[in-house]
Length: 290
Image (cartoon, rainbow, N blue to C red):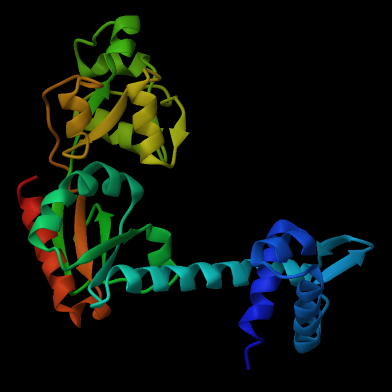
């Protein structure tokens, strides 16, 4: 049987603020009430949650572990209430997607979606929530190979190009051929294999290890390129805006037919919801347009 929500809420505020007095002020109750709730919770659980030293309180190991879980539980509860409030008919469709895809491709296309589907509220959550078992209706994944999931469909094919900012070109000059990039500062995503494969596709021999900073986050890679920190590989059509605005320049016209592609996969939960299928159909329609 769960402890009372009032006791858990009192504990949550006290754990986050490190003070019974601050928790009392946030919840508009007395510090005595907070202390009573936490004592009751400790008795119910059979473990001490705080170490008390006069007016000072610190979390015990059990308290720290419970604090993390309670904070997540209240956050999920708040999200559920907010989704219901925003969409009383229950037409909230949750999609898991990486931040680079969400910011560069999905976000600029949302305005027409609202016009076409005013009854659907779209909620985009990061990929880690998909991995942690959060309820979603569809997820957008990237792969070098064909996806084996039964309900996954191709969404967007990516093509890599070497890109650099005008600032970098001003400093180093514009390269005449792909081989010139070997001696220029490079920015890598995840590891150096992307550049290694690109050079191989361009028939450029790399006789020494490729150097340059490696970032996991594609947004960090793009920011570095825009600010002139190095040359990087940009994936069309995700970098259309940066190309069109001149923030980065495509250095060469050669394209590579790599099979790097986004797929949209509708989940069993999404299959039970007609609105989710409408969202997936819209995504694939946008993907066919680039």
